[in-house]
Length: 204
Image (tube, rainbow, N blue to C red):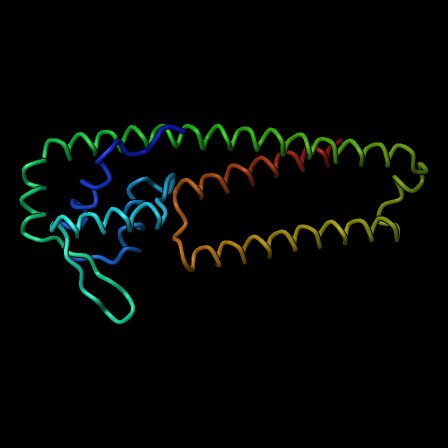
């Protein structure tokens, strides 16, 4: 994947983020992730060395709050940012283009995963049809026989277990990272396709 930031662009954008007020390193990482709509989030190994370099150059200062370090822009940093406003505007344009590119890549990944899901569901439905074809006719038409009740109960438990597991994962993720619009759209698309595939298999 092409680099998200050109050389020196991330350094400049970090200064721009600090223009609104002091921030911890985690807050800067989160702000960058939000700017990219969840399609990209820089690692601590990407952000902290650049912050250290900005501090070394006198453009950023630090304050300690307990065990955490807060970064704030110095007057020299503000002068640097003011002298490079046009470059910052170009960086913003580049970020917008990167968000579109990353979103396109994500949509393609979703489509690929959806094709795999449809193939898995089709294989499962075919296996179910094969099993039904070899079963005695009376067992397939007598309504809820004991075996039919067992299968129905198992299917319901599978759906319930899937629902419970996903809810737990969503809540665990949401406790540390807000769910992005892209993630929400992914969940909706996958569930819609699963619903359609399951309904189609039930009609056969």
